[in-house]
Image (tube, rainbow, N blue to C red; front, side, top):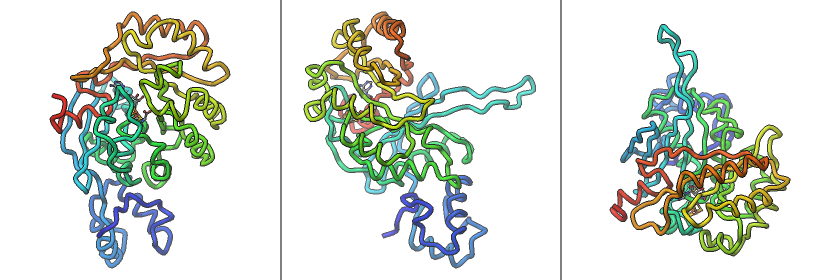
Length: 354
Ligand code: SAH
Ligand code: SF4
């Protein structure tokens, strides 16, 4: 069986002389090559050898849902027939001068999946409902970005930001995710610095430490969602193994760029965790951490046990945090009309929920 060349770091490609690996990276990641055949500055014999051993395994786009705000959610097919989701989020529109020339390029973030399904089993998450199937390989993670960039005519050499917030728990697939971070950041490839890559975790405390040891330079996001263990255990069973204190302790040890912050995601669920008492506790909990909080509206799906909170409640929560010195943003309801929370498109496709 052919190997997926996207699974390999440049140093791992068994090629001599060395600059051949560099050229191959440039072809795939910067010029968007689909075949080895078209890599015209490689000797013909090498191209043939490569085509025998490798394939350029970009996942297939099976479905796209467009949101009114411009975000696009992709259902991607993997080689073995499993599917995952990835989302393109436009962050800033391109700017043109009066003659129509682009003066500032648009900015994008791509949200990638790290596993087919997830073991963690959070109560509010659709991905959890399908159980765990398997880890994605580094190339399957990297390939999601290649597929999306191409589909949107985003120039191959344009950088995008990466968030590991699609399906799956990235730290439960740490080795492959760490490798994807490195492949993304290769200067002959997509050249996406680790500081533009955010790994989001439900709080696997020992794995946060392992990630810290790897010193990749990535940003960290913690899906906190509750400020007391009792509620967090109900929402996220993983809290029984690693409680809030253990997660916070691990975060305190995590190396982070002086100019950056650890992001705490807080899913606001109506009448469950959206009151000022919770905001107060959150301020205390984050004391001493360079943090920023991102409040997310719970995105209901058919049959979901929870509801979307009132806008007023979310705003008050945010104001409380800001007043007490905690940076806090509210995640735009990006893609709300396209069922943008993780797992929702996939569930639709398999006919489970709609
Ligand atoms: N497993 C990792 C990363 C993927 S989940 C993690 O949990 O952090 C990405 C984010 O989507 C998490 O913060 C998760 O809590 C959130 N999410 C899951 N279901 C959601 C829903 N129905 N509405 C809004 N956000 C949701
Ligand atoms: Fe897994 Fe994250 Fe969904 Fe929890 S929220 S089940 S950790 S993907």
